[in-house]
Length: 354
Ligand code: HEC
Ligand code: HEC
Ligand code: HEC
Ligand code: HEC
Ligand code: HEC
Ligand code: HEC
Image (cartoon, rainbow, N blue to C red; front, side):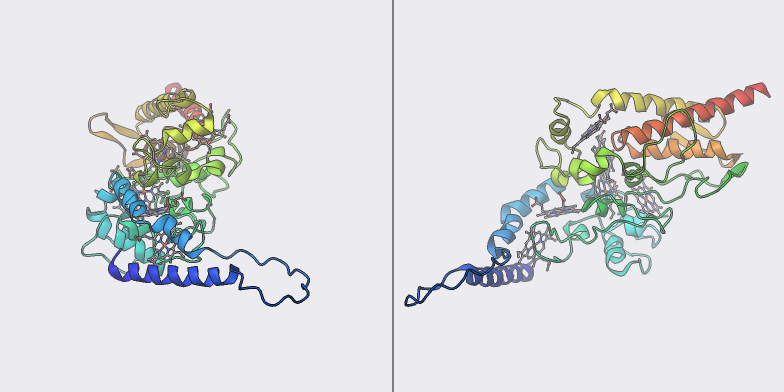
């Protein structure tokens, strides 16, 4: 914080402390008249000094800074790259772009000198100064990019994250009564974009191909309702995890699950999801939708394919790039992958029969 905001902070804190102490202190007793009837209690005021200093003590802000230096957000490898400056990418890829998006609703033009995230990227002005007012620039539910007539609610402060960590495209069958026979993949970058974690946690926006596993009701996920992004990634900072490092907190998993894990592979779910991702990828390679290898990476073939195969590809690449291996929404992810695998099995059988 610069000198100006510090003096503003102290002035505000002082005024509030003064205001609220003068409301609650009793004056000296007057000469004994008859007591009047008790009035109803007023609502408690905010104790200015105490509330401000909970967050604004020097060590707290310095601790947040130290944690934040552990995060990739502070590096902005992609932000300082070309995406941070481009008008169409900057709302999620640079400090300057996100601040414009949050305050103006749009990015006005290309940014000549984009930079990585800083405190001020996510934090702006206070609204109420009360306990949970972290001065976040955005925290309302998000209208997802893949269909901005919908609302995607990650719950409170986690909505901040979903503005950026979301899918940029609808799945190929989205909103259609009947699937078109084929779908054309026009670019080797085709897919939901690299970090659709918001959609995975919320359980919306992937291709719900029919199959033997029922899809959970939208919004029913326990991780969405009990933890969401900040509950895992920003739980109290311990063991170099959580807080402003944004690294998922194993302590938070253990506390909630009453478990004693030493990795995120609770119940072997990450292993199971990893195996399904590999199986689905190999099916897509056999069908000619995906090409590549472990060294150079995998990408889709540009070309025209049966729509259901492109849906399965969309699920595969989106869940691969989610990178939680199912933890974000175990039931939804397992249903998507199992049903995609079954559908691709049928496609391969049909191919073999021809
Ligand atoms: C729950 C935590 C929290 C509490 C409580 C809190 N702040 Fe803040 N405040 C923040 C954060 C986080 C920022 C952004 C930090 C940054 O950008 O460096 C901030 C920024 C500010 C700023 C600069 C931006 C602005 O809004 O003008 C001022 C001034 C400020 N706070 C004053 C106060 C005062 C006065 C109080 C008490 C009435 C208070 N804060 C209580 C967390 C808090
Ligand atoms: C302004 C857009 C934006 C916001 C807001 C945002 N992120 Fe990110 N986040 C990114 C981008 C882009 C990357 C990749 C950064 C890079 O490598 O340059 C990233 C990286 C990450 C990573 C990778 C690991 C690391 O150490 O940073 C995690 C985890 C993450 N974000 C979680 C979150 C959570 C949780 C929130 C909400 C509290 C959040 N992000 C808010 C855009 C954003
Ligand atoms: C709605 C937000 C959003 C928009 C718009 C957006 N991105 Fe991203 N992008 C992200 C997030 C979030 C990540 C990081 C995800 C993660 O680390 O999991 C990311 C990651 C990337 C990566 C890194 C992939 C990797 O695996 O290292 C590239 C490259 C990229 N974006 C390019 C672009 C380009 C180019 C544009 C504009 C044409 C763009 N993005 C627009 C949110 C967005
Ligand atoms: C990527 C977005 C993001 C960035 C960047 C960020 N914060 Fe935060 N910060 C949050 C969110 C979200 C919360 C609320 C977490 C929650 O709800 O548990 C928060 C909460 C806080 C709090 C109040 C919680 C507490 O434990 O005291 C402080 C203080 C704070 N941030 C300071 C900072 C400082 C200082 C920086 C820069 C070093 C910073 N933040 C950078 C997203 C961010
Ligand atoms: C139940 C706890 C939990 C919740 C809720 C959660 N995450 Fe995660 N997240 C994880 C775990 C565990 C990983 C895998 C980390 C690893 O293997 O290193 C992960 C991975 C990620 C990654 C990739 C990080 C990397 O370094 O590869 C990003 C980005 C991310 N989460 C963002 C989010 C966002 C945004 C939200 C909310 C929409 C969210 N997460 C909700 C636990 C959670
Ligand atoms: C705030 C509480 C909370 C936190 C934090 C939390 N979980 Fe969960 N998790 C739950 C609940 C509740 C369920 C649903 C339990 C059930 O259905 O049996 C669940 C389910 C799961 C499942 C699915 C179990 C299965 O066999 O299908 C996995 C895997 C999981 N959690 C892993 C994690 C990991 C890893 C973390 C930390 C990164 C974590 N959880 C953090 C509450 C939490």
